[in-house]
Length: 144
Image (cartoon, rainbow, N blue to C red; front, side, top):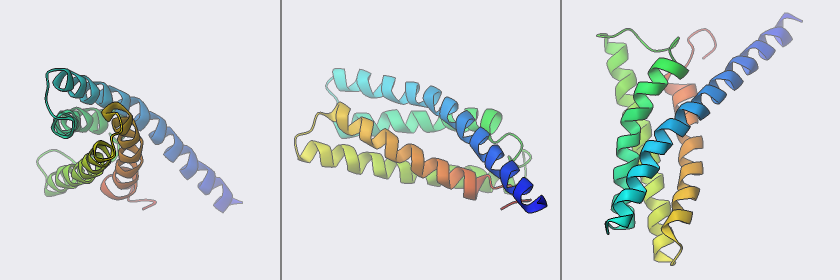
């Protein structure tokens, strides 16, 4: 019975983290898409506009994630572990950025509206970075 209780607790913690991550992601996404649409309307190429928006969104996401989502799993400031978390966070963001660029670029190559491509990229990047951040970067030492 204790095993089932522990599994329920872990699933509940992960679900709560997912909800917080989703809300924080909406804030970072607002930054990302706002920059993307502004640059796109200013004549910047869709792939460059997408990359710029995503890059600024990364900074917003670190600030919000480390304070609101994974606050109990962020290493102390000034430690090697914290530096490693930041580096891995950036690496996960770069993987999300590569996915975003590939999807928007691929959509562009087949003549798809860049806004549609960006929406697809948002979904793929969200799932990819959540998985990496929750299970690898900010893993809970007691369960991970």
